[in-house]
Length: 142
Image (tube, rainbow, N blue to C red; front, side, top):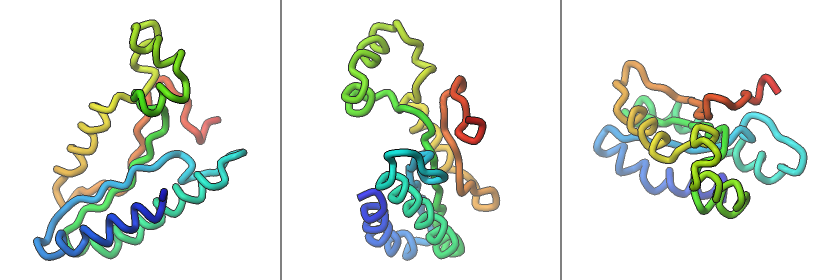
């Protein structure tokens, strides 16, 4: 679903955006879109395909007034469905304020960033962006 779901979404909504001459598609991805890692074969392939799909759609739909973005979430997002299931002890501590919230990406900050992307003027559109906690080492320095 990593690539096919994104393709199906774009296929369904692009015609509506084309008819009205504007819109925004934001494809959320992960660092695996840029580089694979041990035991990440399927995930890296899906994220790479999603990124390439976004690039193609950007070139195809941008001239039609549709802003297409690819956003790399380079870190864990604070959510019971992600951190809570994968790292229950860490999530419990996050909720108890034992681990500072700036160690993870907060959903409301992602939403604010996406709103910023949606409201960009056409003469200064962003295609690609990384979102990460301030204290994380970027993947290209690891």
